[in-house]
Image 1: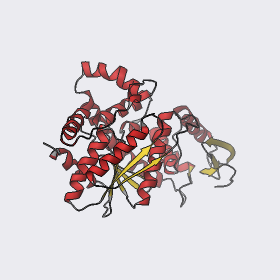
Image 2: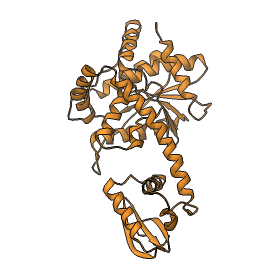
Image 3: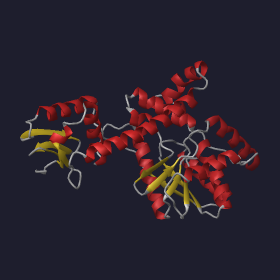
Length: 338
């Protein structure tokens, strides 16, 4: 039966978890199975509820067939009778970032720009169970902590855009069956990305080498790993609450750029570490490596009891962490004083 009622119902359930919006709704569509089927099902639901739907496509220019994919997405939009907006971007991997990370960041920036032009604040993304399970494995292999193992959130906010992933518990196989039914009815079929077969990309290497072994030995591994991500997300929320409460006891400045060293020293070692991560994340800074964080903690613990030490100046990203008059300070490079 098409559209699949179960897949349609997951869309309003996911939207109910997001900040409310009475404006139009967007769908990011690459042209692949997952995003295109999300666009089709979202169209059925939005039309039934009188909601305007927009499709957004980002042309990365990384594949020879990218122009064809763009045309295919616009053909789908024409078939669904909804507006489609696309933009072409260039991907440059700088600052140690690989092509995958650079493409991901470029895509989100482009989607935000497209959404802003038509006043869309809520964007549906087609990530599914396979994507979520692979993300958890990749983060585990890279040494991510509890925060990272929560993987992709069903609802997250990035700048002015609310990102919604209604199908994180839906398998790719389910979506492929639905896509075949849609193609049989309409003649429109999704694109295939040849780069998915190139295992010099990390995620593709995982899919081609490790995933088949897991499928053979533990057929239900994806559902189990995705459940682990949900549990990690719950643990992340609890840890966030603990960190916020702990930080509030540190006599923070109004802008949270400094706190009392003596108060920090009253926390247990684990909470000292955790609240420092919270502090840096609050200011939008990347998480330090484990060795770097240990060095910071070591220096803070070895300071004079009253924190009078102008020689402690530890650089982190674009900022300096120092301690003056008993207060641990975070300031931009070139600035002085807490």
